[in-house]
Length: 101
Image (cartoon, rainbow, N blue to C red):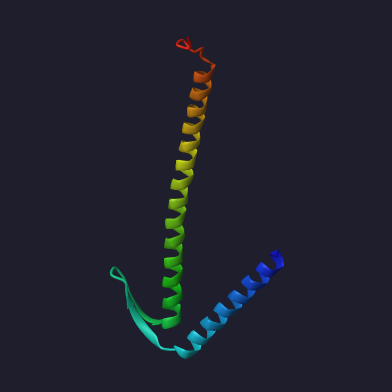
């Protein structure tokens, strides 16, 4: 199963590289990019696309990382709460019943 996953991953990367090559070949033009605080003149479309794709990917990765950290923190908190609740139940079960008459 691991070999199949590696082959599929390799073929996917090869397909992405092929699409990137076709995109670069079909778009040789140069443009100017204005991103609000800076202006870049004479930048190829492919380079601009790749840079902003990478920036978006990094932003998504950071966002998911923060979400994952929040989930891990919540899991740790709930684990502590569970241990406290189990300890309370154990201590209550060990107490004698007073109204068992």
